[in-house]
Image (cartoon, protein in one colour):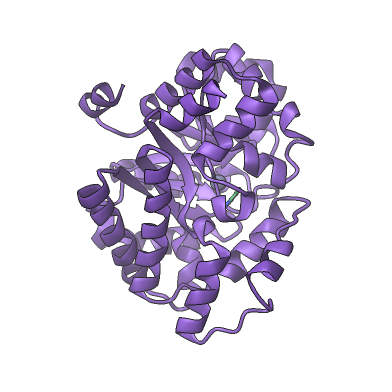
Length: 326
Ligand code: ES4
Ligand code: ZN
């Protein structure tokens, strides 16, 4: 009804989306044909059938194998452009996207090949669709600190066009403090910093992300709610949480959408935003995430407006651009 229509119509920002996670089965098969890659699935439908995950790692295994079709600069362009068309359809007018360079470097795809394809599409999206953007280089936490430093070295020629760094992949067993030094170096270079924390990992990982990585946002953060002092600190600091309901459901972080902690977070004064994470794998883009929460948590129109406002306030837009969007 009307709250759904309100959510659709509001201008929004997306702050947590992995470009490789926007690779729809149709494009995966098209790029596989184009690049002569053999996919271990008969067709798009068989691939979709495999999207049943019990935890983050089961998803990541498919995510890394699926992205093996991304090889040329044009592949990265096409991937990014298709996502921007989804933004336009959902009234997402600003987006801050992650990419995982190490996952492609491991397959022999040069940093510049990835970067230039992505950046050209983002620039075209700005010029032709009016969608502003930030680009976030995400380090893979299951790899070593040394690998992260090597990746940062490869990124040096491009840093004037990269806004920040993130930390993603397998959370359990790879706490934020493993990357304290590389994140310090990134901050010294003037990069913004964010990290996935408290998706599967304990509150202690969120503490580390705040105190040792000095992050400006928390990606997910669900499990922070288990710790009252931590929840209070996040509220006091006004840190934005980039929450991803459909992702949480598909990765069994929650048992059902009705159990999602979004309204609890809002009630505790946390600066929450709604995001799609890996929309091709989790069943929908930004508006689908709004719809899921409206239907299962019965969000009010005021809460929907608050979430849209939060998305701009938590963004890395300049203060002037935030004001213009709000
Ligand atoms: C991710 Cl949902 C999620 N969590 C951690 N790392 C990721 N990389 C891509 N999607
Ligand atoms: Zn994520």
